[in-house]
Amino acid sequence: MRFAFTAQQLEFRDAVRAVLAKECTPADLRVAYGDRSWRTPRWATLAGLGAVGMTVPERHGGLGLGLVDLVLVLEEAGRAALPEPLAATTAVAAPILADLEANGPAGDGRWRAWLADIAGGAVAAAVGTGAADDPVAGADGATHLVLARPASGPEAAFYVLAPEELAPGACTVEPVGSLDPTRRLARVTLGPRAEPVATGEEAAGLARTAARRATVATAAELLGVADRLVAMGADYARERRQFGRPVGSFQAVKHLLAGPRVALEFARPAVYAAAWALDEGELDAPRRVSAAKAQASDAALEAARVALQVHGAIGYTWECDLHLFLKRAWALAAAWGSATEHRRRVLAGLVAERSLTSGTPPD
Image (cartoon, rainbow, N blue to C red; front, side):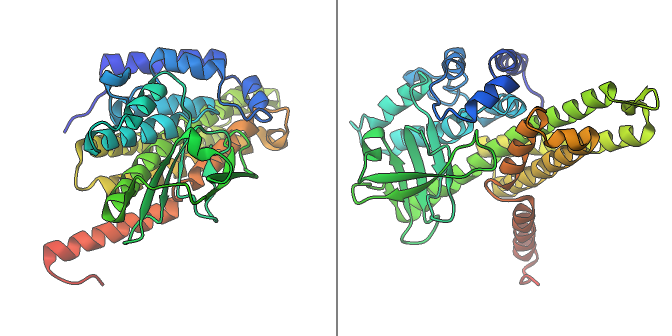
């Protein structure tokens, strides 16, 4: 199969890139370190552009697009280290709410209202398990929480908590420290008033869908972070001089920077393929998702290592912009499963597939 993005998809990506280049600068990221509010002019601009409501059905004010359309925009969010929760809100919460509306009881207007609010930029969602040992990114300040506890089994429960359910006594959100302060982590404790929207196997299915979409969205952001880090390393190599020459002119430095660029170019099609597989409901979508996250995490971590090595000791300092993107790469590489964990999933899937086709039990 031949895959290529359309001219319209690329134009929308370029429009988002232009907006973030002006409104999400390193100076803006430093401001976000101490400001927990997501209600920024930048978020309003993205909503007005249609980026926040990309996956909201058209009848509710969105664009009615899929993950393939969104993945390029998420790359740009990663490239800028966008503090606002675009991935959680648009890649996960909106499609989940759309599914609940399509399959829920007639006359239930909650989903319609929330979807319209997402399209209008009035919602910032956070997605996670809510387990005590698994803080939820973006929960500190979110208007809506999408939680799956636990992810499988007869006791599975799936929650979509609205603002009124985030009141004291219904749901406790306790901020915790984060490697990347722009990704505000919080420990979520559900109260007795929190009622699940699904239980049992239905909840487990929603949890799998949410996790897979969140994983691909995170992988797409990692592509953008890796691209930014490689560019920052190359730019600094052109500026820094040793022995009267830019260090970027030395072959060893060129080879050093080429490594993460190659890894990034291999990771991109894997992420795009995973997004397509989820949109199309392909049977091998879970394996594609894990392969995408593993490759994207590897590319971003390698880009972070090389960019820091090229910068030298100055790369660790607050004054250098590099640390803003290093922290985002490290945080996202660990989110929704590390590269090692996802490689185990790919291997397990291949072994299971082999046993089914050959009729022999796994080794």
